Length: 384
Ligand SMILES: Cc1cc2nc3c(=O)[nH]c(=O)nc-3n(C[C@H](O)[C@H](O)[C@H](O)COP(=O)(O)OP(=O)(O)OC[C@H]3O[C@@H](n4cnc5c(N)ncnc54)[C@H](O)[C@@H]3O)c2cc1C
Picture 1 (cartoon, rainbow, N blue to C red):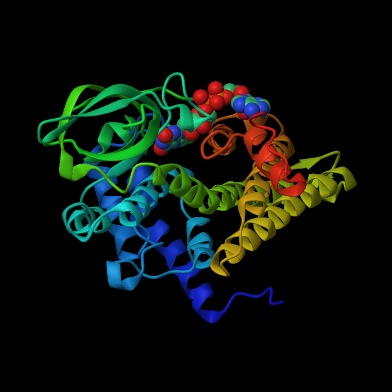
Picture 2: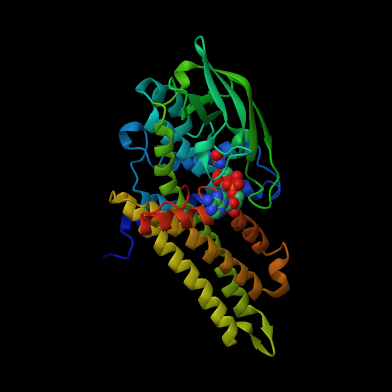
């Protein structure tokens, strides 16, 4: 067992840190913290992300990706500001899904500009009535001549309002009358659809939206994969996304920890720095413990993916654990700041709001517990 980073992994992590300082944070700071970034600003950031291989980390070099391990990707991902982390996860995961399900001609048509970060994309699975159980999607696709016609709506979709292309999970009726999931790529310039932003608690510089398809006509050549593969592919990508989101939470908790350590050394009460009080030291120790244990479980899950192991339980455990531990850690770091912690000036209330967004996408805590439970017992608690 080896717990230290290789020199290559350290370089990748440090290079991501420098990119954030040089190319991302200044763009975020130049825009209002509570409003979705304009698309041009986001595209500037995507140019930097593409330069580091972060728009297609799961693709091999032969397909235009960097051929990165999931663990190396995680080390870089952890450095990203949360609003960019969630956006690029939607982009690269959509690219990975299209890559896995498409023909060579479809890859050639859809992927190069997305990988270059010149166009933005997203995956639309969740609907107003369908969340944790995506097998029930109601958005319908039917063939009509040379086209496919899509009707339905998608909800809570990252990047929806700014995307050029959306990979939509639809229900397609099979000859035997049963419905199966099918992915259809909808290019916004050829097949316009309505999208609106949804206001949320956190990640407010990001884009989370609703999309409506009203007789949206798409060429038949935009249907991906064989009907039925979509559900399996969703699970495979979710297994990678879950520890990545756990690392985004760990990165946020790390920032809160650094602020709390600095404040504890500076703030005096009862004639001495509060960092000298035993109970403050215990709070700092709890925060550090949450960060280290979250990181280790997430790294472990990503490394297991790289080794080709089944990680359904491990990935679910990593995300659920990191979400709870890091949310608590950020809250404790705020508490160490007293009233300053809830003020807007120090930025902790923003981390707190942003962190609260993450336990929902890619499996809520309850769903993740049931997945882990199914791996432990071999019994499916979802369906009878
Ligand atoms: C920041 C963010 C980004 C997102 N990005 C995307 C995206 O890019 N694309 C996309 O398609 N979707 C996206 N989503 C949507 C997300 O995937 C769904 O919100 C999530 O799957 C949960 O669905 P729901 O909100 O409908 O909750 P529901 O499924 O209705 O769940 C409601 C509550 O019931 C609980 N619950 C459900 N089933 C069970 C059960 N069997 N046992 C116990 N409890 C249960 C849940 O845990 C939850 O607490 C995003 C959401 C957020 C917040």
